Amino acid sequence: MNSKTKRLTTTGVLIALGVILSFLKVFEWPFGGSITLASMVPMVIIGYKYGVKWGLFSGFISSILQAILGATTTQAFAGMYDPENAAVSVVKIAVMAFLDYIVAFSVIGLSGMFRGKFKNDTISIVSGATCVVLLRLLTHFASGWILWGSYAEWFFTEGINNNFGEKVMNTFSGQALSAVYSLIYNSAYMLPELVITVFVVTVLMTVKPIRKLIVKED
Image 1 (spheres, rainbow, N blue to C red):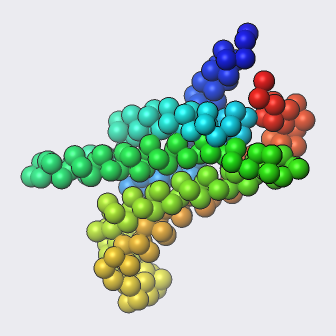
Image 2 (image 1 turned 60 degrees about the vertical axis):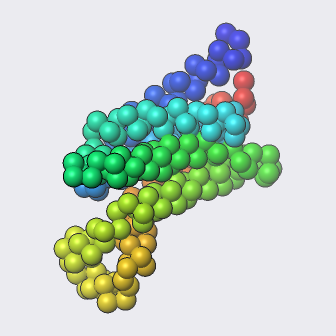
């Protein structure tokens, strides 16, 4: 098998594995967002093994698959559509698809950004994995702030009806409240995802045969 065919085959298998792992959920928010069994690790490996350019391309392919699956398995897309204002609904759905899927999953392919920057490959890939998960969190935060900010008041008064929610409502309002809501909502699943991703990548790098496969492009 030549190197190009091997790269395509390996990438296809890892993308498929990532999609499968995305369905194995530990926790899921009712309006989207979940903690999975290390579903980002395969894409992190692709980005580190083959570099940033190939990683971005692979991340984009993965994002298309995730968008298609998200449109058919979640209520988020349906919840964005308002038959009384179809034009605005289409724009909102397009923005959500772009931020929550295309950008959010494509950036994971940047995991090789620190390759060669450190003497230790484990430090390099863990640093890259940390950055791309935080970048994904940033895109979800932007989407939540722009598109779902109107849910902030409900979230803090009924969704988490406790002293913390009351304090937030007494402290913030308007766009600031929407930003706090989006940050808390998305951090609740993305930070655990960060811990899981870093842990699994670190463990994989301790296994010499796997480490060799991850580090060597061929």
